[in-house]
Image (cartoon, rainbow, N blue to C red; front, side, top):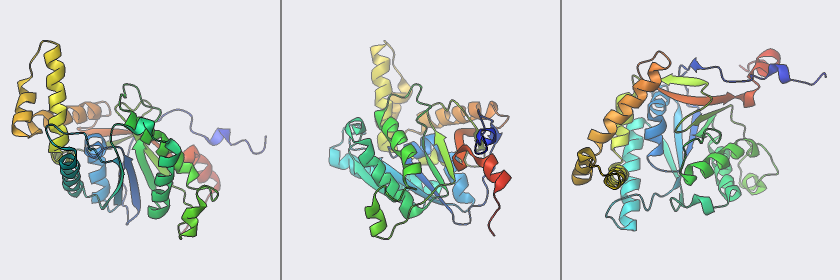
Length: 293
């Protein structure tokens, strides 16, 4: 039929090495569940965006109030917030937006309610790219916070363009907005389309990750508990808990992970993404569109 654009859709993943282009102040909006998600999953790419002149805005959905070892809830919230700010400075993040949900219970939160808050951020910051967890790469994902944030952000991409979705936003001066690209990440990205060389920013990724001392001390304690149940001990995790310094544990994990990912694509160190440009209809745009001056 005349309006059948199926021939213009890119069916199936085609992996390419993505060079981070100059940002010229354009916005990348990253939506995550927890403070350490940015550094651990995509810290190298975020630092590369910052270096290239993009404005990076990160929305943290939860307050990580229970992610600590031996601290009160109030002290945990304060420590994780402070360490997130430090990590953001290392990566070159320009702004942090806090939604303040309790951590680890987003499975009980209305996805539509959360989606409205993300739509508001899209309309406020008007990003070129919207970045979050991939709802279709959830193999091995046992954190419902990640799952809920993935779904809400994915729907916010297109609902932020509808003037009947939350007209109260428009009443206070916001406008509908369409993001040009969606970048998805996860524990394992199944349909990888783009890989970013992070050789030049890997050290900053590690520095930013290690800034999350409170959360990673708790992670090390989890490793101790699991090892003990299996009849093992892990002195490396013991040292992290004792000294409140995760570098001896986290640095080798991140270096090996980045090296392994990079090796699959002929790079020294890399991060993987599923990127959708123009809603998957980029060939249509290139065939019939024209660039604005």
